Length: 419
Picture 1 (cartoon, helix red, strand yellow):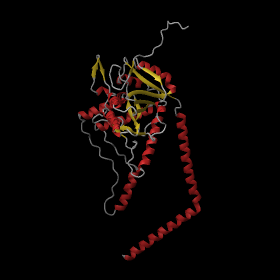
Picture 2 (cartoon, one colour):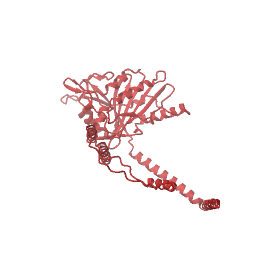
Picture 3 (cartoon, helix red, strand yellow):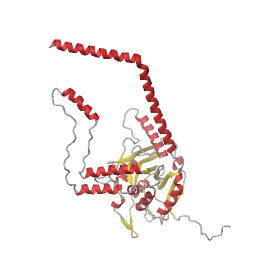
Picture 4 (cartoon, one colour):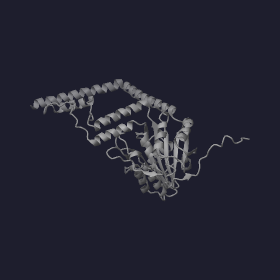
């Protein structure tokens, strides 16, 4: 027995030794080939990166326009009107838009940023969608803020919001909000909580909710609808989430069976048994109906980020809880809600070099806010969901911190003399 054991060990040693010698011979004689493949790999990686960067630059919008929207006493606002406006943007698939809600000097301001090439389309759309509203092109408000933050005087906090569940599950939208009648009309103002937050700030504190979005193209829309249909089937129990067996599963099973085959029978990957699903409950059917309702409306790829800036001597992260309060009102039980993307927040969890890492993360976040880049995680909202989160309030609704102008500029009558 010892002889067999020693023979096996000697044979294994010689076998490994021969393999090692062969490996050394390959390196000595064909090292140039290894270097060639490494350099070729680096070249192709660089080439692909260069082409992607060039393609991105070609598609990048160079000129942007920013409109500030001002409310008059006669403005017909509200989420329903805003939804109609979003639906009219469906065909504008080049570039993207940015909706911005600003809290500055205890006033709430509304901004829309869009590619300048769409200006001749956006202006009549605003006029046709909103009665008695005033808008004007303005300089980017970031030009009044420091170019780099944080600095010696100011600090900041920021994060991105993402959906808790998969995109097909809707958030709570305005038809489901408690509403009240004002002058015989239904008025729903989810913007009120943001206004309350701004009203409590110091005049030097700055709040921002930035919603970057773009319409889905046809292929993206079809893919989203297919994904939503799969979620409906899962909710109704028609289709359990399937785990497809891959070559990786077979390879792992082979290695395990090889090592344990002496002690037990080999076990190979198998398709799960198909069982008849139970009949859906009322709540399941209702969820499926709401998913179906979401995909019937125009959908947009969306990203949300928020920013709080204040002088260091009054900077208070407690004020950032107001953002959570604002987005919590859209939570839909058993469906979807918003949550903070912990990976995108300006806070750093690591202990080592904490101050340095936090500073760099804040600087990078502020740059993304100024450029209006899409956030790291994007999701899909439909026009009704977008309008619930961001809309212009009606002039009849009295909301703190939202100032109204007394009149809208109009064109002079055509019969007036021109000389």
